[in-house]
Length: 398
Ligand SMILES: *Cc1c(COP(=O)(O)O)cnc(C)c1O
Image (cartoon, rainbow, N blue to C red):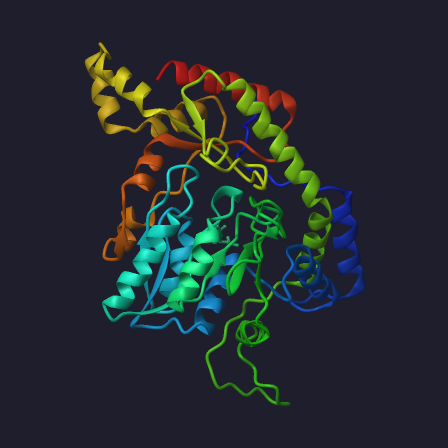
């Protein structure tokens, strides 16, 4: 049995070992210390923002930014429906109601015009909208050319969920620099990792200062423990910040490897009925993406054709109950290759069934036909060849 190929395994090297060893030997084994300060400075510089706050997760970064922006019971936060649950969960932690907005088909990112329209509609209904959260999906920035001016006109802050997009850009601006604030994630499977961690970025000093205070149990600056608001324990440890600094030094190399892997898939699958999300997008190629996860979407015409002339009753019954994505994930897993569904849209999640949403059917359609392929920088060429030959066989047999 061949070894299992994972979707996005981290790559660590001697660079990270040296950094972590330095942190351990320095005695700074705490959620404070020189590596935390340096890591914040280095990420802020890389992204081109003035302030950064290292935190225990990307979810924590979203949560604290939302608190600062006034999210609380009775308010609304408008966000992409196609995202990891963390984006919506952070909204619910504050007591605000999430309102979901559908995707555009080219890259799965939020339909920017629809997001602006959703905010406008809610405001016209008399709702208090404290923020809109576009998500930079799979390492490609959302359409900020529409979102920034559109939301600014309506006076609603833009909080960018850049958990998946560090290293990506749009025009001459880096992911994480758009909007009022942005959240990064350094979870184990992201473009770079601290094993677990995140960062809040903003040019607004008051926002980051407030989040910094909230992240350390909201201690007031007096000699005793004084608290005037509820706080959280959300700081990143100095040891993990050291790991992050090592990863940051290697970020461009890891992105280049992910791009190389995507290019190999694209060349190998040119004749399959697959579309690459983001890459084959009308009007914008994927040269600015960080290529975090390469995502393919099955061509619907092929699926319809197969369904209608499938001779086997059992096969036909199965094909009505399972989606093309289900079948690809299952068949690849049997070959010991981890392929996953795209994020199941939040408006289809049982836990958010009561939430308001602005939908077009695009995200649901992408969810039924799309999968993410193994994309990690540590993949060997032989492993990529295995993915290519397996997926080719699986798609041919659909
Ligand atoms: C990973 C992720 C998060 C959460 O980050 P954590 O560090 O795991 O808390 C939020 N949003 C999106 C889109 C993500 O992919």
